[in-house]
Image (cartoon, rainbow, N blue to C red; front, top):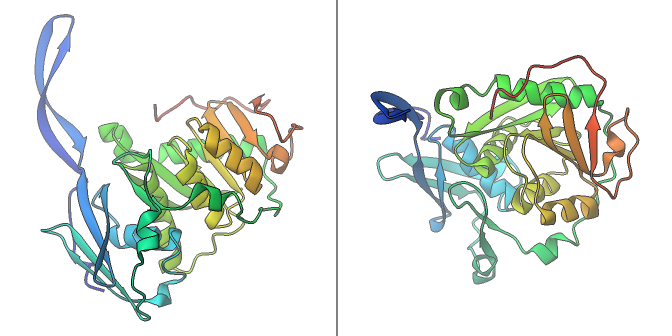
Length: 291
């Protein structure tokens, strides 16, 4: 697939001026690169994503899988990137034209870079409920977040990106980062589709806010649990409770909040229909690396 030799910088040094207590200090700062890439699906323009210009094949594949346009890597005939114009062309072995109905369901997300997804929230409420168990302890919840933050090297350099990881209770399996939190998740999905990695019975750990489009991506993938350093929205909490997904947010130090289906966390007793604040009796962990 014509994409392997692409090398684009994900950060760039620009001159800025720091002002502190009236003193002016010009210096070069590393900033996250914002790169627009337009996905063409079977020769039809589908969507433009604003992203970090890394793992663009994974991003395109993950986006298409999340939206139900491809099911597995073998569905794809070719992936071709025009890096100068910011275009990526994905063709499938079985050509299916996009319909007006699909475009009518396009939604500009609340994510960084105005991501786009194709879903109807009312349809999503009728999705199947995830009832699969997943045994994880409160200490493991904290450990997974610490591991995500320790791997967030681009954030340490720029302060301008999000990170996501697919994990099991023992640790990280796949890690990706992007200026957009939804893009970071799609890169995870694309990596797993491309490399035939089983996503079920895993945990998605993310640095970003959990809004409805992130929650629905998790639900479509049959992932039973999402852990975030940040907050969820009201709609994502309602969706998580309806769809049986364990939703944990505000993982800070040794503390976190359970917003839905806390029964999968084995060492705490919670009411699944209420947000519970947990202060675990685990060993001191280092405080937030990623602010």
